[in-house]
Length: 258
Image (cartoon, rainbow, N blue to C red; front, side):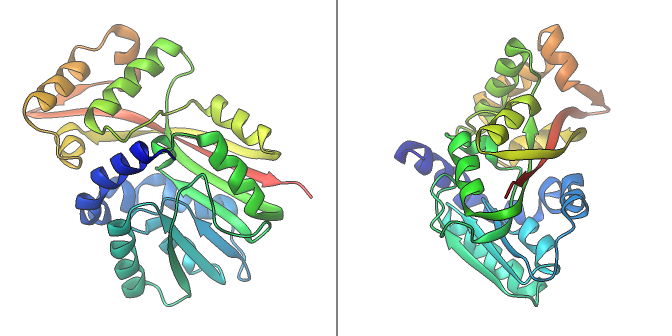
């Protein structure tokens, strides 16, 4: 990760670490239990949770594995994650601060690498997948869940512009086909892929990143006045005074051969 990207991520997420602890999307979103169900972690496993945020995925796997390492690039996030995990989990959990594209672990260290709702912040997602594959044991698993976009370039560009206005540390949300290519290039065999819609409350979504003033107005205009194709993807709708819309989240499970 470049110094600028690292600074943006730490600047955006450091002051809002506690907000992510209580965020419904992160704490109770549909992909959390789904990842555990799909992977079926075993009691002796060593698990690495990359970009753990407030530690929700690490918590979900901690009860099933021998050791979980919760990692993040933002110190404040790791402070919140450590407190959260110490209060909620009795199994061994370690925390480690590092970049997702440079994992400071020996080759073949983990049975599972998991990354949930974070990879759209990575400047080099292909490097992350390569590193994840490197630290996996032969037969190990990579479980990824992240916001995904249409394979149509104009729609993908519009949705990513919308996301980046809300959060400057947003790099790019990819399609499931893009992610499958990253997995293939790293020597991982995709064993499962799926995606699903998740309903978002615009005001809560904007407030989580501190969007206000002119940026709030521009963000709302981008949503409510979106052209036809991006509008079909985002599906903005008013329910009383509330403005809602939809994002899509994808899940990919890959296995390291060997």
